[in-house]
Length: 551
Ligand SMILES: [Zn+2]
Image 1: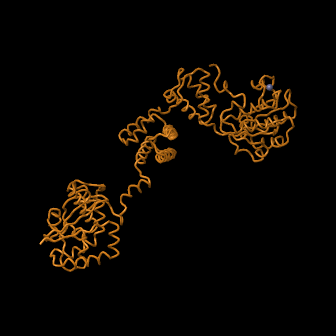
Image 2: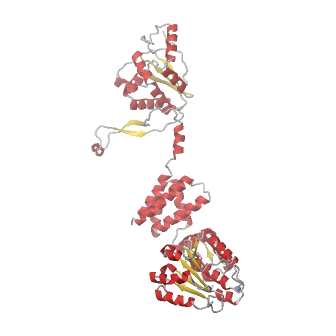
Image 3: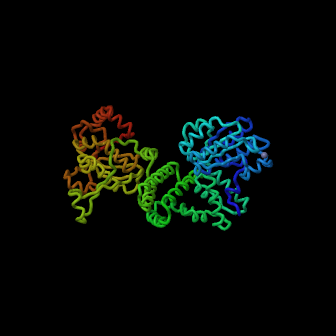
């Protein structure tokens, strides 16, 4: 390869221009319909094809068959234009010839007719570099040039041009060439050059070229030499100081696994790379995974990761420590994997439809007396809050769950919990039915009845949402000693129920069984008519349970 690729494969016709369809279409139409302006402005990123287009357009204007959108390529004008030696196509670089004298020379040139062609064409590259005086000198000629003169101005920065220049030219905006177009072009060239390659490597090259075809081709020249005839992602990664794609794979896998230790190791390995390069590579990887519908990253996760990566770039500008920024961004990504969406939260809460007020799902656990170091922090609490999970169904360990229920009650209302502990005894938990025995007297029954919605709710939280509560009556009167009850609540045998509609305003103890069945029944109906009780019945699908005290 004696010639650099950018020159060797410089496009010679409109159809060979890469990624500028809108511009080439408009210019083609203008040439075909002979609707030509005397001044054109081509603006766009470097390497987007402005100069190439200007040359093709010039050739189209001077061709013997022209002006035509398809120059013949065989006439003397076409040949000279292709070899960049046409005497009537004058190229000037405003970056080096920016003074008023340079423009005066140019204006002088416009006064003479073309030597051989029908037009005299002036291509001024980087036109925004001209001085203010030079612009002013150019203005009049630009507005009313001789008929045979055409101007093609090119710039990467049209905003720096005076409005007077902009208003006197036809403006064509060259967009950044899509990287897929560039990759495609590279593979086309490599096939012609007989060089083997992997497409992923070409993607990496076009990313590194930042949308500039010229820059990318320069990199490709370098890659062909560096790779000794076979262009792989590994070769490109080491040539450009980029991460190996396998390494990127490993980083994301580790984040998904949530392996913190491994991430710290990775950060150490990445010390050899420039942090911004690493972030850019991570973004590119993420983008590609997203477009390939990679199942590992949901849209939400992709968005979060992208946000974290972009924010990390800002941290770099704050002159932050590279390794620290990487560690921080990896750990932020770890956390982002765990944040729930509103929908997920709603789903998880749906299992708790009957949630009444807001309750802390916590359990107080006595803290073992240990180091004195902690004493200064808090004087009294010898307990800590531990979140407990809410099982939907618990068949085993009913007694254990029952203890949790008591702890929850205790957390909510000491009075209710004490009453519950003293008078309610766990019997069994089977097939979604929790059975307990009650031994409450009138007064305590009222307390328990009053607190029943809360008790019911906690039962659902601890035992599961569908849990049915069944009560039996225990004959034994129980001791009211609180401390005693606290310790042995679940082992005491006692009785009484509080949900049985039979009681209510009844002043007699239900344990005594002195009331006649009829009387009880009528009172029960009365209570059942109470709107609040009705509501509770609806909510909890209450079953009526007949309780017959033992004699
Ligand atoms: Zn020709």
